[in-house]
Length: 357
Ligand SMILES: *Cc1c(COP(=O)(O)O)cnc(C)c1O
Picture (cartoon, rainbow, N blue to C red):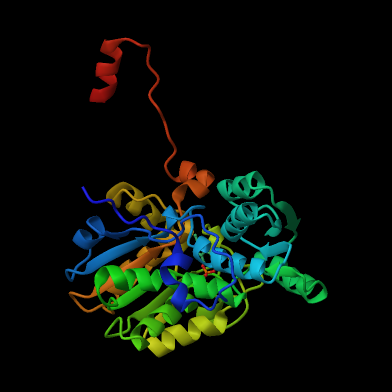
Protein backbone atom coordinates (compact mmCIF):
# COMPACT_ATOMS: atom_id res chain seq x y z
CA UNK A 1 0.00 0.00 0.00
CA UNK A 2 1.23 3.47 -0.82
CA UNK A 3 1.81 5.74 2.14
CA UNK A 4 -0.52 8.72 2.37
CA UNK A 5 1.24 12.04 2.08
CA UNK A 6 0.95 13.45 5.61
CA UNK A 7 -0.75 16.79 6.18
CA UNK A 8 1.72 19.36 7.52
CA UNK A 9 -0.46 22.33 8.43
CA UNK A 10 -1.74 25.36 6.55
CA UNK A 11 1.56 27.25 6.27
CA UNK A 12 3.23 24.32 4.51
CA UNK A 13 0.15 23.71 2.33
CA UNK A 14 -0.46 27.30 1.24
CA UNK A 15 2.79 29.15 1.90
CA UNK A 16 2.90 30.63 -1.62
CA UNK A 17 -0.42 32.36 -0.91
CA UNK A 18 0.57 33.70 2.53
CA UNK A 19 2.50 36.95 3.09
CA UNK A 20 5.23 35.36 5.22
CA UNK A 21 8.90 36.15 4.67
CA UNK A 22 11.26 33.27 3.93
CA UNK A 23 12.78 33.51 7.40
CA UNK A 24 9.40 33.18 9.17
CA UNK A 25 9.63 29.95 11.16
CA UNK A 26 7.19 27.26 10.14
CA UNK A 27 5.40 26.39 13.35
CA UNK A 28 2.34 24.18 13.27
CA UNK A 29 -0.03 22.02 15.31
CA UNK A 30 -1.22 20.53 11.99
CA UNK A 31 -4.22 22.86 11.86
CA UNK A 32 -6.47 22.92 8.80
CA UNK A 33 -7.44 20.08 6.45
CA UNK A 34 -10.74 19.82 8.32
CA UNK A 35 -13.48 17.60 6.90
CA UNK A 36 -16.15 18.87 4.50
CA UNK A 37 -19.00 16.63 5.61
CA UNK A 38 -22.01 16.17 3.29
CA UNK A 39 -25.31 16.80 5.09
CA UNK A 40 -27.79 13.96 5.36
CA UNK A 41 -30.56 15.20 7.66
CA UNK A 42 -30.59 18.89 6.80
CA UNK A 43 -30.60 17.96 3.12
CA UNK A 44 -33.58 15.65 3.70
CA UNK A 45 -35.59 18.03 5.86
CA UNK A 46 -35.21 21.16 3.73
CA UNK A 47 -37.10 21.55 0.45
CA UNK A 48 -35.33 22.23 -2.85
CA UNK A 49 -32.89 19.30 -2.99
CA UNK A 50 -30.02 21.44 -1.74
CA UNK A 51 -26.48 20.10 -1.90
CA UNK A 52 -25.24 20.96 1.61
CA UNK A 53 -21.77 20.50 3.13
CA UNK A 54 -20.50 21.27 6.61
CA UNK A 55 -16.95 22.61 6.94
CA UNK A 56 -16.34 21.22 10.42
CA UNK A 57 -13.77 23.54 11.97
CA UNK A 58 -14.28 22.03 15.41
CA UNK A 59 -11.67 19.46 14.41
CA UNK A 60 -8.79 21.93 14.44
CA UNK A 61 -6.12 21.36 17.16
CA UNK A 62 -7.78 23.58 19.78
CA UNK A 63 -11.31 22.94 18.54
CA UNK A 64 -12.07 26.03 16.48
CA UNK A 65 -11.16 27.78 13.20
CA UNK A 66 -9.12 30.32 15.18
CA UNK A 67 -6.07 28.01 14.84
CA UNK A 68 -5.76 28.80 11.11
CA UNK A 69 -5.23 32.48 11.76
CA UNK A 70 -3.28 31.97 14.94
CA UNK A 71 -0.53 29.86 13.38
CA UNK A 72 0.17 32.57 10.79
CA UNK A 73 0.00 35.35 13.41
CA UNK A 74 2.54 33.45 15.53
CA UNK A 75 4.85 32.78 12.59
CA UNK A 76 4.83 36.52 12.02
CA UNK A 77 5.31 37.30 15.74
CA UNK A 78 8.32 34.97 15.88
CA UNK A 79 9.77 36.47 12.70
CA UNK A 80 9.67 39.93 14.26
CA UNK A 81 10.95 38.53 17.59
CA UNK A 82 7.96 39.53 19.72
CA UNK A 83 8.17 37.92 23.16
CA UNK A 84 4.61 38.41 24.33
CA UNK A 85 1.26 37.92 22.65
CA UNK A 86 -2.01 39.45 23.74
CA UNK A 87 -5.63 39.00 22.77
CA UNK A 88 -9.11 39.92 23.87
CA UNK A 89 -11.38 36.94 23.50
CA UNK A 90 -14.82 35.47 23.99
CA UNK A 91 -12.89 32.22 24.58
CA UNK A 92 -11.71 30.48 21.43
CA UNK A 93 -9.12 33.09 20.44
CA UNK A 94 -7.68 32.77 23.96
CA UNK A 95 -7.60 28.96 23.78
CA UNK A 96 -5.87 29.06 20.42
CA UNK A 97 -3.40 31.84 21.29
CA UNK A 98 -2.47 30.05 24.52
CA UNK A 99 -1.75 26.80 22.67
CA UNK A 100 0.39 28.39 19.94
CA UNK A 101 2.20 30.50 22.58
CA UNK A 102 3.03 27.32 24.50
CA UNK A 103 4.21 25.72 21.27
CA UNK A 104 6.46 28.63 20.33
CA UNK A 105 7.74 29.69 23.75
CA UNK A 106 6.00 33.07 23.93
CA UNK A 107 4.23 34.54 26.94
CA UNK A 108 0.50 34.84 26.41
CA UNK A 109 -1.93 37.27 28.03
CA UNK A 110 -5.64 36.92 27.40
CA UNK A 111 -8.32 39.49 28.25
CA UNK A 112 -11.72 37.92 28.82
CA UNK A 113 -15.10 39.51 29.46
CA UNK A 114 -15.96 38.76 33.07
CA UNK A 115 -18.07 35.70 33.76
CA UNK A 116 -19.15 34.84 30.23
CA UNK A 117 -16.52 32.39 29.01
CA UNK A 118 -17.51 28.81 28.22
CA UNK A 119 -15.87 26.41 30.65
CA UNK A 120 -13.95 24.35 28.11
CA UNK A 121 -12.29 27.43 26.62
CA UNK A 122 -11.23 28.76 30.02
CA UNK A 123 -9.75 25.36 30.86
CA UNK A 124 -7.75 25.40 27.62
CA UNK A 125 -6.29 28.88 28.20
CA UNK A 126 -5.35 27.94 31.77
CA UNK A 127 -3.86 24.54 30.85
CA UNK A 128 -1.66 26.12 28.17
CA UNK A 129 -0.35 28.55 30.76
CA UNK A 130 -1.81 31.88 29.63
CA UNK A 131 -2.11 34.76 32.07
CA UNK A 132 -5.85 35.34 32.25
CA UNK A 133 -7.21 38.82 32.95
CA UNK A 134 -10.93 39.21 33.43
CA UNK A 135 -12.42 42.59 32.44
CA UNK A 136 -15.78 43.94 33.53
CA UNK A 137 -18.43 44.49 30.85
CA UNK A 138 -18.88 42.93 27.41
CA UNK A 139 -16.16 41.65 25.05
CA UNK A 140 -15.93 45.04 23.38
CA UNK A 141 -14.36 46.53 26.54
CA UNK A 142 -11.67 43.85 26.54
CA UNK A 143 -11.03 44.47 22.82
CA UNK A 144 -10.66 48.22 23.30
CA UNK A 145 -8.25 47.76 26.21
CA UNK A 146 -6.11 45.30 24.25
CA UNK A 147 -5.80 47.84 21.44
CA UNK A 148 -4.93 50.62 23.90
CA UNK A 149 -2.22 48.52 25.55
CA UNK A 150 -0.42 47.62 22.30
CA UNK A 151 -0.31 51.30 21.34
CA UNK A 152 1.77 51.86 24.50
CA UNK A 153 3.71 48.60 24.22
CA UNK A 154 4.49 47.93 20.54
CA UNK A 155 6.69 44.95 21.46
CA UNK A 156 3.52 43.02 22.35
CA UNK A 157 1.93 41.19 19.43
CA UNK A 158 -1.85 41.62 19.28
CA UNK A 159 -3.23 38.37 17.89
CA UNK A 160 -6.89 39.36 17.53
CA UNK A 161 -8.42 39.23 14.07
CA UNK A 162 -7.58 42.94 13.58
CA UNK A 163 -4.11 41.44 13.04
CA UNK A 164 -4.03 41.03 9.24
CA UNK A 165 -2.05 37.79 9.53
CA UNK A 166 -5.03 36.19 11.30
CA UNK A 167 -7.24 36.94 8.30
CA UNK A 168 -4.54 35.61 5.97
CA UNK A 169 -4.46 32.29 7.81
CA UNK A 170 -8.23 31.99 8.02
CA UNK A 171 -8.68 32.50 4.29
CA UNK A 172 -7.14 29.03 3.78
CA UNK A 173 -10.48 27.48 4.74
CA UNK A 174 -11.91 28.88 1.47
CA UNK A 175 -8.98 27.28 -0.38
CA UNK A 176 -9.72 23.90 1.21
CA UNK A 177 -13.42 24.06 0.39
CA UNK A 178 -12.58 24.92 -3.23
CA UNK A 179 -9.87 22.25 -3.47
CA UNK A 180 -12.30 19.56 -2.28
CA UNK A 181 -15.34 20.63 -4.33
CA UNK A 182 -13.33 21.55 -7.44
CA UNK A 183 -15.01 24.98 -7.52
CA UNK A 184 -16.67 27.47 -5.19
CA UNK A 185 -20.18 26.63 -3.88
CA UNK A 186 -23.20 28.80 -4.77
CA UNK A 187 -23.57 29.98 -1.18
CA UNK A 188 -21.30 30.07 1.85
CA UNK A 189 -23.09 30.42 5.20
CA UNK A 190 -21.36 31.15 8.51
CA UNK A 191 -21.78 32.79 11.93
CA UNK A 192 -20.63 36.40 12.37
CA UNK A 193 -19.19 37.81 15.61
CA UNK A 194 -16.19 40.06 15.15
CA UNK A 195 -16.62 39.38 11.42
CA UNK A 196 -13.02 38.35 10.79
CA UNK A 197 -13.97 34.96 9.41
CA UNK A 198 -16.46 36.13 6.78
CA UNK A 199 -13.86 38.72 5.72
CA UNK A 200 -11.21 35.99 5.49
CA UNK A 201 -13.33 33.51 3.48
CA UNK A 202 -14.25 36.21 0.99
CA UNK A 203 -10.58 37.15 0.59
CA UNK A 204 -9.69 33.49 0.06
CA UNK A 205 -12.36 32.91 -2.57
CA UNK A 206 -11.41 36.08 -4.44
CA UNK A 207 -7.73 35.15 -4.47
CA UNK A 208 -8.51 31.64 -5.71
CA UNK A 209 -10.70 33.06 -8.48
CA UNK A 210 -7.95 35.48 -9.49
CA UNK A 211 -5.48 32.60 -9.64
CA UNK A 212 -7.87 30.67 -11.88
CA UNK A 213 -8.36 27.90 -9.31
CA UNK A 214 -12.14 28.44 -9.23
CA UNK A 215 -14.45 29.67 -11.98
CA UNK A 216 -16.98 31.58 -9.87
CA UNK A 217 -17.51 33.16 -6.48
CA UNK A 218 -20.02 32.15 -3.79
CA UNK A 219 -22.58 34.44 -2.24
CA UNK A 220 -21.42 35.07 1.33
CA UNK A 221 -24.23 34.92 3.88
CA UNK A 222 -23.39 35.67 7.52
CA UNK A 223 -25.52 35.44 10.67
CA UNK A 224 -25.42 37.42 13.86
CA UNK A 225 -27.44 36.45 16.92
CA UNK A 226 -30.60 38.56 17.19
CA UNK A 227 -29.58 40.00 20.58
CA UNK A 228 -26.10 40.85 19.29
CA UNK A 229 -26.72 42.07 15.75
CA UNK A 230 -24.89 45.40 15.27
CA UNK A 231 -24.35 44.95 11.52
CA UNK A 232 -28.00 44.03 10.84
CA UNK A 233 -29.25 46.90 12.98
CA UNK A 234 -26.61 49.34 11.75
CA UNK A 235 -25.59 50.48 15.23
CA UNK A 236 -23.23 49.50 18.05
CA UNK A 237 -24.99 47.30 20.61
CA UNK A 238 -23.71 48.29 24.06
CA UNK A 239 -25.03 45.25 25.94
CA UNK A 240 -25.11 42.32 23.47
CA UNK A 241 -27.08 39.28 24.66
CA UNK A 242 -27.12 35.75 23.27
CA UNK A 243 -26.63 32.17 24.41
CA UNK A 244 -23.99 31.90 21.66
CA UNK A 245 -21.07 33.39 23.62
CA UNK A 246 -18.60 33.23 20.71
CA UNK A 247 -20.68 35.77 18.77
CA UNK A 248 -21.78 37.93 21.71
CA UNK A 249 -20.21 41.04 20.21
CA UNK A 250 -21.69 44.52 19.92
CA UNK A 251 -19.05 46.34 17.86
CA UNK A 252 -17.33 43.97 15.41
CA UNK A 253 -13.67 44.69 14.63
CA UNK A 254 -14.13 43.72 10.96
CA UNK A 255 -17.53 45.38 10.49
CA UNK A 256 -16.52 46.87 7.13
CA UNK A 257 -15.04 43.59 5.92
CA UNK A 258 -18.30 41.79 6.57
CA UNK A 259 -20.37 44.44 4.79
CA UNK A 260 -18.01 44.29 1.79
CA UNK A 261 -18.05 40.48 1.66
CA UNK A 262 -21.85 40.45 1.68
CA UNK A 263 -22.38 43.25 -0.84
CA UNK A 264 -19.59 42.37 -3.27
CA UNK A 265 -20.64 38.72 -3.38
CA UNK A 266 -24.36 39.36 -3.75
CA UNK A 267 -24.94 37.89 -0.29
CA UNK A 268 -26.23 39.41 2.93
CA UNK A 269 -25.89 39.56 6.73
CA UNK A 270 -28.92 38.35 8.66
CA UNK A 271 -29.78 37.51 12.24
CA UNK A 272 -31.19 34.43 13.94
CA UNK A 273 -32.86 34.12 17.35
CA UNK A 274 -31.35 32.18 20.23
CA UNK A 275 -34.27 29.78 19.93
CA UNK A 276 -33.38 29.04 16.30
CA UNK A 277 -29.68 28.72 17.20
CA UNK A 278 -30.39 26.19 19.97
CA UNK A 279 -32.76 24.29 17.73
CA UNK A 280 -30.10 24.00 15.00
CA UNK A 281 -27.52 23.10 17.69
CA UNK A 282 -29.63 20.15 18.79
CA UNK A 283 -30.51 19.16 15.24
CA UNK A 284 -26.83 18.94 14.28
CA UNK A 285 -26.06 16.75 17.30
CA UNK A 286 -29.12 14.49 17.08
CA UNK A 287 -29.66 14.17 13.35
CA UNK A 288 -26.27 14.81 11.73
CA UNK A 289 -24.09 13.35 14.50
CA UNK A 290 -22.05 16.57 14.67
CA UNK A 291 -21.50 18.27 18.03
CA UNK A 292 -20.76 21.98 17.76
CA UNK A 293 -20.90 24.87 20.19
CA UNK A 294 -24.02 27.09 20.09
CA UNK A 295 -22.49 29.93 18.02
CA UNK A 296 -21.40 27.41 15.41
CA UNK A 297 -25.01 26.49 14.72
CA UNK A 298 -25.93 30.03 13.60
CA UNK A 299 -25.18 29.26 9.95
CA UNK A 300 -27.49 26.24 10.00
CA UNK A 301 -30.24 28.26 11.70
CA UNK A 302 -29.63 30.88 9.03
CA UNK A 303 -29.98 28.44 6.14
CA UNK A 304 -33.26 27.10 7.51
CA UNK A 305 -34.57 30.67 7.84
CA UNK A 306 -33.49 31.80 4.38
CA UNK A 307 -34.89 28.66 2.72
CA UNK A 308 -38.21 29.35 4.44
CA UNK A 309 -38.08 32.89 3.04
CA UNK A 310 -37.54 31.52 -0.47
CA UNK A 311 -34.11 33.10 -0.89
CA UNK A 312 -32.18 29.93 -1.82
CA UNK A 313 -32.86 28.55 -5.33
CA UNK A 314 -33.56 24.79 -5.54
CA UNK A 315 -30.51 22.65 -6.25
CA UNK A 316 -28.05 25.20 -4.86
CA UNK A 317 -24.76 24.00 -3.45
CA UNK A 318 -24.33 25.42 0.05
CA UNK A 319 -21.31 25.20 2.35
CA UNK A 320 -21.90 26.00 6.02
CA UNK A 321 -18.94 26.60 8.34
CA UNK A 322 -19.34 24.95 11.75
CA UNK A 323 -16.87 27.12 13.63
CA UNK A 324 -16.17 25.28 16.91
CA UNK A 325 -16.48 22.00 18.81
CA UNK A 326 -19.41 21.20 21.12
CA UNK A 327 -17.17 20.07 23.98
CA UNK A 328 -16.13 23.70 24.45
CA UNK A 329 -19.36 24.59 26.20
CA UNK A 330 -20.46 21.72 28.47
CA UNK A 331 -22.80 23.92 30.52
CA UNK A 332 -25.10 24.77 27.63
CA UNK A 333 -25.14 21.21 26.29
CA UNK A 334 -26.04 19.70 29.65
CA UNK A 335 -28.80 22.29 30.06
CA UNK A 336 -30.24 21.62 26.62
CA UNK A 337 -30.00 17.82 26.82
CA UNK A 338 -30.07 17.15 30.57
CA UNK A 339 -28.53 13.69 30.86
CA UNK A 340 -30.73 11.46 33.00
CA UNK A 341 -29.08 8.07 33.27
CA UNK A 342 -31.25 5.22 34.53
CA UNK A 343 -29.58 3.77 37.64
CA UNK A 344 -29.77 0.01 38.06
CA UNK A 345 -28.09 -2.75 40.05
CA UNK A 346 -25.63 -4.95 38.09
CA UNK A 347 -28.37 -7.50 37.41
CA UNK A 348 -29.26 -8.61 33.86
CA UNK A 349 -33.03 -8.54 34.49
CA UNK A 350 -32.82 -4.89 35.49
CA UNK A 351 -30.76 -4.07 32.41
CA UNK A 352 -33.32 -5.83 30.22
CA UNK A 353 -36.08 -3.69 31.74
CA UNK A 354 -33.99 -0.54 31.25
CA UNK A 355 -33.41 -1.16 27.54
CA UNK A 356 -37.13 -1.79 26.99
CA UNK A 357 -38.31 1.45 28.59
C1 LIG B 1 -14.69 33.40 16.79
C2 LIG B 1 -15.87 32.54 16.60
C3 LIG B 1 -16.97 32.95 15.82
C4 LIG B 1 -17.06 34.31 15.20
O1 LIG B 1 -16.10 34.52 14.20
P1 LIG B 1 -15.74 36.01 13.77
O2 LIG B 1 -14.55 35.87 12.92
O3 LIG B 1 -15.45 36.74 15.06
O4 LIG B 1 -16.93 36.57 13.08
C5 LIG B 1 -18.00 32.06 15.64
N1 LIG B 1 -17.99 30.85 16.21
C6 LIG B 1 -16.96 30.42 16.96
C7 LIG B 1 -17.02 29.07 17.57
C8 LIG B 1 -15.87 31.26 17.18
O5 LIG B 1 -14.86 30.83 17.95
